[in-house]
Length: 203
Image 1 (tube, helix red, strand yellow):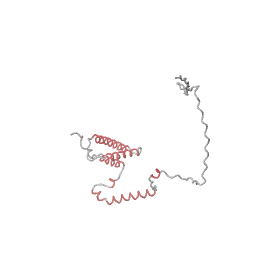
Image 2 (cartoon, one colour; image 1 turned 60 degrees about the vertical axis):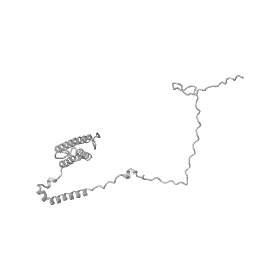
Image 3 (cartoon, one colour; image 1 turned 135 degrees about the vertical axis):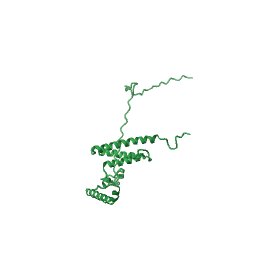
Image 4 (tube, rainbow, N blue to C red; image 1 turned 120 degrees about the horizontal axis):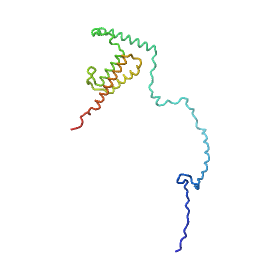
């Protein structure tokens, strides 16, 4: 059998970069592809009518859901309502004059001031915490969320009246807020550490 001649073949190194990342001097260059011809401009269709843009944009969904603000009350309406309210107070005081006299009270006893406002919110918060205002002992089912809101009301009142209170009013509000916050912390700790309903689950 005749010997076949060895067919020679050549391996072309097409690597562009050396091991160090440099461009090889003998690296083959890529042929740049010819640029594509520009696309023809689209001509507007004469049969399609172009509608003018609206001068006012449509309102967004958020704007549509905003609640309507009530009309501002005029100064005259404010004065008239205040005068009518005072007259109503005078009428009811006169109507209850007999009962007040029997109880040893006067209409002055029922007038509100800052101290009475703070004391009223304090009593409300104490009862919402489940405590008896007289003894300070647990007596009612606590309403923690309502109690927290009442304490926050007093905090807002303190912030909004800053600089407008005398020394006595400021001390009263500070002491009441401190007492209510400490009571809230104590009650919430007691509730979170209490065993779940149904016992601990042990036999």
